Image 1 (cartoon, rainbow, N blue to C red):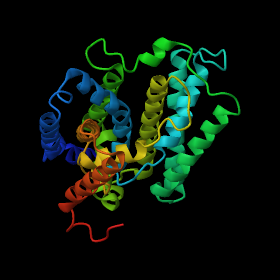
Image 2 (cartoon, helix red, strand yellow):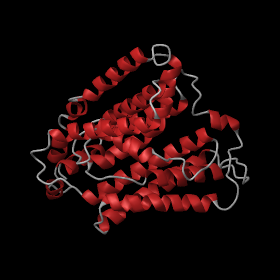
Image 3 (tube, rainbow, N blue to C red):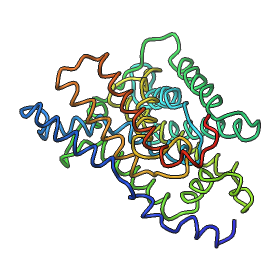
Length: 332
């Protein structure tokens, strides 16, 4: 890939990030509506921290997922990786089943496991030409299988250190530690996206992969990078979720696939790729977290909450793809 092509990909990067940021308007509208409906409960500092704490795990996952979706791929392995990485972390930390105490190394091993599963997904996708949807779906269950092996036939492993369990929700700076981690991951993702080739190339691949190949972009290599990042982010999310749970569980990431993919799309990164970004996903997660929180405080039944969330996702998908309807001759 020559320097001119790289420069062209980078041009207008900031405009691409902030252009048409309608999801901020949606977020503001939700805040206003739910503040009117629940003036005593919704617009409070305590509830704000609840929303941010809820948004922490999907934000971390969403940062990695954004790089994959920008290339027009999809990663469904989130829940499996979270389960495997979360259990690996718990079993390598002081727990009720083993005497292990790897300290920070337990987190490193868990993230490495997630990145490795991401690389495996990308290799199967790029070398065997299998759709990322199918490969990552299979890797979801591979991750769950690893989690089942780690869980074994013994009792559920619980973290021995209670301080570790309360750390994610503690807020010594006014914002929960877990969301501060999420903001750190998002900031790092934004810097990579804006100022490195690793961040710029996914836009080119998502816009037109054939042209990207002709300009010399090693598409397969960048797919591996993107899925590795996504796997590492899912693993870190699994660690944070396991800390909050205070135990290791294969199903620690249940529901995260829909939540994060919905947040990515709602944020303005279409599944066809080529536009969007990490900051948009950050806002998309806040939109969904605020929506769920407001519906719960309003006493809406869980079944209706799912219906409303699905309607929001469909609407966002239509809005995200509307401007591309003439360019996309085939929809699949």
